[in-house]
Amino acid sequence: MIQQALQSALVGLGVAVVCFVPYLVYQYRRYGQFSASRMVWMIALLVYGTALVTYTLFPLPSQAWCAVPHPGMLELDPSLYFRDMWQMHAAGTSWMGVATSWTMMQMALNVLLFVPLGFIVRHLWKVGVARATLLGLGISLLIELTQLTGNWFTAPCAYRVADISDVWTNTLGAFLGAVLALLTPRLAADADALESMRADARPVTRGRRWAGMLIDAVAVGVVWAGVSVVMAVGYYVIAGDTSADREAAAAFSHVITAVAVVCCFAVVVVFALVGSGASLGQRLVYLQPVSTRPRPRFWLLVRALVVQGVALALVLGTSSLSLFGVAWLGLAVIWVAFQPRGLSFALTGCQIVDARSQG
Image (cartoon, rainbow, N blue to C red; front, top):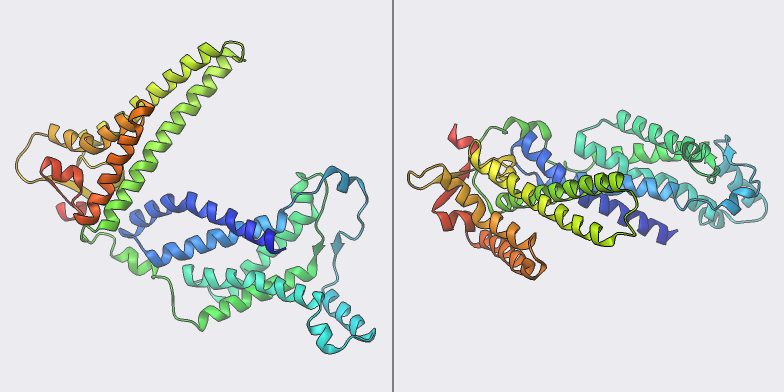
């Protein structure tokens, strides 16, 4: 059980990593700034939610297990826990033994399982105790119905007992979590207060510069992966099985790489020549390049290519040069630690400011 719980938490952490950049963008576009406390609580919710799903659904049953009848997969007696404990005591078990029994532990774990739900939603979204309790009830019912139907008829058979006792214990847990949240200081920044300051210009911090860089890196990766997948699928749909003609497949893989590189460069160039000249990541975190003296617009393209363009050429070019590209990107990231203006702005004599300060 402990191993399954750890694996579920690791899956949830992986989902949180994937969702980090999209939620970072969401924060900047809604609040105009990064909120560390809300990010922590959102990650906690993602980890908890994913872990809850994987913990309650996996491992899946084998065909051999499903081939044997398993009666009693639906339990509608809400007093089951208490009847089992009373029978244990009637059979000679002391009350201390009953209190430390597996039945008692299972009931307590079902309550504790949903305490984080009530606690997190209360702090993150200011959900009231009643709504947090109803949310726990709804999610618990959904889980039990999923188990009753064998993951909505997608599993070979129903392999977990759908127990009404789990519903009321889970609901109790969500209620207790929400009540506990009432007794603790508010641990997440208020969303309405953050949103009210969305239009306010803010200092250009190192964290904000790194956020823009991270978004740019992810955007380039998405373009690269998207173009590569679309072209590869299109090629195999048209050409069919190419296992016998490996030379043709290898040649086309080079074409895919070349097109992907061109598309990534196009992203950099288009954003440099349109609007403020800021990259996609810089725009999403409200940053804008400003020249220290009058320069032609072409200079914004130079600024964009001096780091991003060089890095793309090296990283996405030949494998022998990729390490130099990674080192160049690493230098740009480290540079911000000493000077938030950044390497590209220092090399081209530009400044970077909050876009909202420019009207």
